Image (cartoon, rainbow, N blue to C red; front, side, top):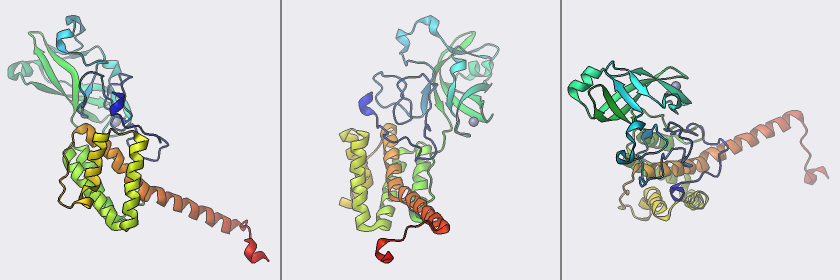
Length: 304
Ligand SMILES: [Zn+2]
């Protein structure tokens, strides 16, 4: 789905944290979107749940699936069998590295047979930091000797969205931190509301000239990232809607749109504060060393 992707023209590390942050895939190796999320397949699923992952390279439907391709099940001795086990890789919510995970706790076969829940929880261990990672699977079928699970899974905990707040004023930081928390917890419309409040805090801090600059920056992001017009209109309404009309409601976003809004909002905060702060700091340091070493060249005006 190339048309749905937001492209990141700059991957020079200027965004801290989560550069490959919400990669929740089992590294199927293709279909990775430029958002960092992995949209697992190119099937009709246009707005995949950003919390879900997939162990398979394709999300085929059950009816087309050969009966022999069963890949994930719990046997009657409560052992987990998984033919793609060695490919089990995701972003650890604790150490934030993309790591292989190993099953650590599997529910008892007898208990599952007794209660027959639609979903089961498995605990894995991160091979990098050995922290527990909780995954939820949907049960496909209860057999007499095995319980078949869908290879798709939901991560119960997600890696936190992070941002470098060094140069960001306190009023803006307070609301944007909450915005990121909302996103991390999948509260996408709360995230949208807090994004609007973040912009309002920035407008208050930067004044009219700053507001116009942010508006230009948003348009620049649209061109750079090639955001779909309907999604861009929503972003604009979320971020700037209240400026044009204080009663304008915040539009509803799904997970996919929220992911794009996240990148756009980070970019705006970065451009408004972090980039400027880093640049000023770098120039200050350079001036300091010039003064220290005395290699500064005397300006012509004062030389004669
Ligand atoms: Zn880890």
